[in-house]
Image (cartoon, rainbow, N blue to C red; front, side, top):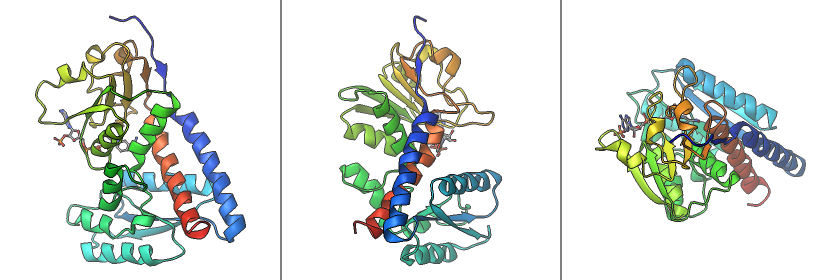
Length: 285
Ligand code: NAP
């Protein structure tokens, strides 16, 4: 039934507005505390995609008046070496937020490295502390992409109460936390993953669908419930999402484009949380 054309959820515009507000808040901190917010970025090795992501985050920081302190480490760094570096940043009063770019390399205990981030500097929302706070609905920093998705849903006045939200993907930084945030907003949440049986039938029941799989055009438009809200968090080579956009846009009521949907929101939330961390330390401790 191809009866409609979905409205696009514009992440680029919303991210720009959030970043403008963060820049104004960063300037206010600089004026009042005579120091600008500072994000430390830790990069292990030279994986080209990670190098690009970190550069992009630093460039956006600079535009918003946030200093970055870049800490590159060799791919051969040990878990204890990485933990030591992150611990030093956690203890450094001039650093307000810490971003440890992942993946960090298979020989490293990534969890141990993340846990060395002090909760009050966990602006990327990757520690157990942040995850638990989010699960309990308590204040804290959220995982950035899930946080960005929730902001997009709110921007487009999507009422989540009692809605069936289906999240395809259960990674610790994306699928799992976005499901928890949706649950916290009274949606009825179903998680799907690689062992799910009968996935298309579950997708067809979704009022709100979040695709976080990492497989190009994995969700077929024909499986989308007419009128559903479709959030495509996927970002695959060639700027292709996890949802088959051309077929899905005729079934959904709202849909995020790729690029320009979820992607820009991730960095916007990172900047916002960095400025917030700095404000908590410098202005309203
Ligand atoms: P991930 O860690 O690889 O997780 C992928 C998830 O998809 C896993 O839970 C996996 O299930 C599930 N999955 C894989 N194949 C499946 C299948 N055939 N059927 C059902 N589920 C399947 O990936 P991620 O880090 O969450 O990222 C997912 C996508 O989001 C990627 O395209 C990534 O580039 C994108 N992303 C975008 C942003 C952004 O800023 N826009 C940020 C992060 C990620 P199992 O758990 O069973 O293995």
